Image (cartoon, rainbow, N blue to C red; front, side, top):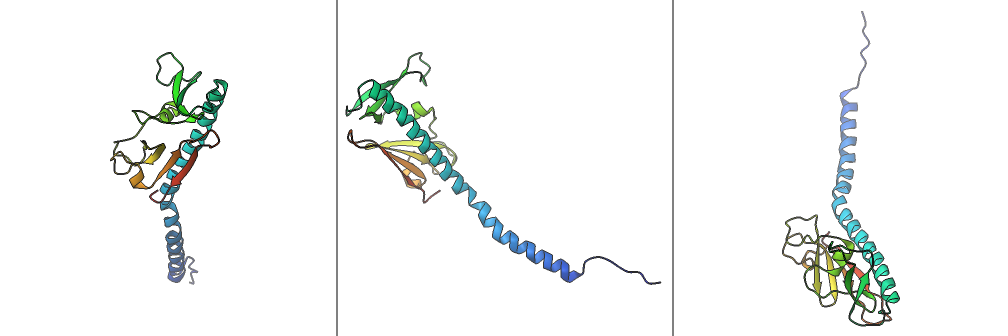
Length: 174
C-alpha cells in the first residue's frame, strides 16, 4: 500500500521564514518613523491655522484702518474665546498678530488652542514668546522651553507694513 504524502518540505518552510524575516526587517524601521512624521504634520497644520488666522486678523485690521500701525490692537468680531460676552481684541503689528509676552498668547486665544507648557507629555503643543517671535512646538522635557527640543515652528512678527510675518521650522528633534 503506497500512500502519497502531501505538504511542505522543511526547506520550503525555512525559505518562507527567511523571506518573512527580510520583509519584517525592512518594514519595521518605516513604522517607527511615523511619530516624527506625525509631529511634523501637526506643526504644518498649526502653521496653516496661524496663516489663516492672520489673514482674518489682517482683514479686520484693514477694515478698522490699523494695517499701518506698529503696535496696536484689533477687535475680531464673532470671536469670544474667553466667553466674556465681548468680541476679543488681539494685539497686532502692521495688521498681523503680534504678542506682548504676557500670559496666554493672542495666537492661542485666536486659535483656541490650550498651552501644554509644563505638562510632562511629548504630545502637547507649548507656546513660548521671546523677542518678536512666537515658538510653538513640543516640549519633551517639560521645562517650558520648546526651542531646546528642536521640534517647533517659529512665527516671526511683521517688522514693517511691507513685510509679512514668517513661519519657519526647527524639525531636527521630531
